Length: 369
View (cartoon, rainbow, N blue to C red):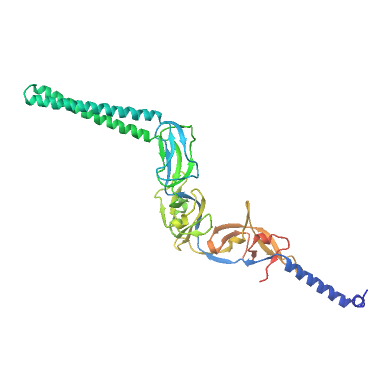
């Protein structure tokens, strides 16, 4: 044992001071190495009542292509997700019967044309003979009637040819515009019937958000100062270019459909059917008065399945540093940048962690203010 160590051991005061400074040093060192989590103090904040609902994206131009002729689907040239051009043949129905009909109609036109040529020549000969007095007027009238009948026969044959050509066209499903295949409802070899859907195609632009507002909350939605749509890819809130509210409510669901057209830039690369959030914010004071409510930043809320909670700063004792305790809360409406309303589980003055993931680590402590 050195002389210095012997001196400390013999002096209890020095020994106590050394132990105290040692505990404080290692405590400060442990605190410096522990995860530092920023916190915010919860307080009442003035927010305006609003309405936030789930909606979905929908292509403004979306078409279900159905068969117009009966037969087996001989060719299905596309699948879901394929890009198509206007006029492109997407599916072909077995057209052997319609091809036979086209050939028969063409033969009918040729026959009617030959009969008309013969009737025309017969009428001209009879007319010349009548002018010279070699035949009676009745013969001329008969030739004229036969000519008109031949003309009508040719018109009927041409109409039949047009009809058979249309029937032939019904065996081919073509893209009505440039777009994408959203879904296929049948496969090659399946039996197609008139009116049975085969393909669904849509144009990528324009895109709109569709939301169904409960009839009981129509007054709040109509009085909103602004309507916003949260884009699914970036999470940003955008204002639609235009909005349309259908004039009638659905008698079964008791909801009213709102259609919110996105701008071209906002709707770019969006996929129909994707879920979005729609917010009716900033309702006027005549409809709903502003209230003071407890709100926390959205980043402070931890969601795990059915659990919604925050990490609250909790003291572990006078001689121990502060830590975090997980506390379940019940949340209300989201108010954008103002945060999320807390209905139960917190009180004014509580301090919550802004990063719940770091706050859940062992030894995490509030960051120094």
